[in-house]
Length: 294
Ligand code: GLU
Image 1: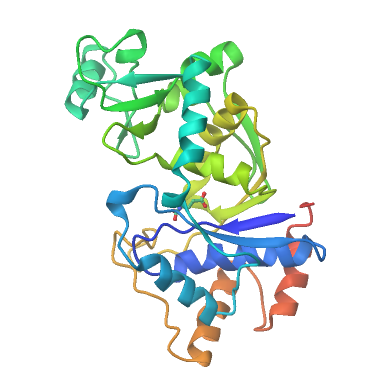
Image 2 (image 1 turned 90 degrees about the vertical axis):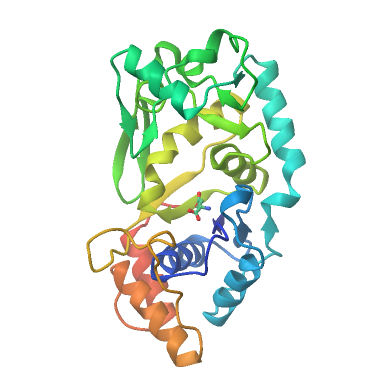
């Protein structure tokens, strides 16, 4: 069994990200034997949003909480050759195409089709460049999700906490971006390649990411990769009821002393429905809450 915590270094760990870190660590300790490993991957592929030095800050915060990876952490920006290989595999299979659309082009195409449809503020791509760039310059490479999904209908997957899930990627998301022409690799491609290359068997992460899973499963199938098990953890909400995030200014966890770090961990354990303040007890409780890993 191999689990992982994969933070984006866009800010320090906050109470919400610590929940995901603790949960993935507990899952490996609860279900893995002596060979099991818990890995940390710094997801800095999406370079525009990342802050320099923040990966190290996160690793120090994890260490202060006693969450030590079983192998040296990996950094996505040092792994771009892997993403290049995956993109060319998709290109060769006719499952990736260049797209020249700006946001404005996409909005106009959606309006023409009578589909003023956005999903969480993201535009559902109407497929404009599927048959060619129409004289435009390529801005991105997209995954031909619609073609790959074909007549298969919605993609079904099971979450270890949330139960059966499904999403019609072609209709609800459209052909999504794999890489921007000006550089950054999209999260979807990088995460799928890394999870497979690192042999991850169990992905445990925040519930806000659950909606990405169907896209990731489609990409795994297109690339001939195994699909790990997924478990999405409860989110920590701010005082206004919205999800805590770096974007809305969630404050860094306090690791200034052992006692402070322990209090942060205990708070994270409560979000996961665990009682007491002892890790061995949390591991045992986790095993009975989520028995079905390896
Ligand atoms: N890097 C992503 C984030 O920090 C998480 C990716 C994942 O766990 O799949 O939101």
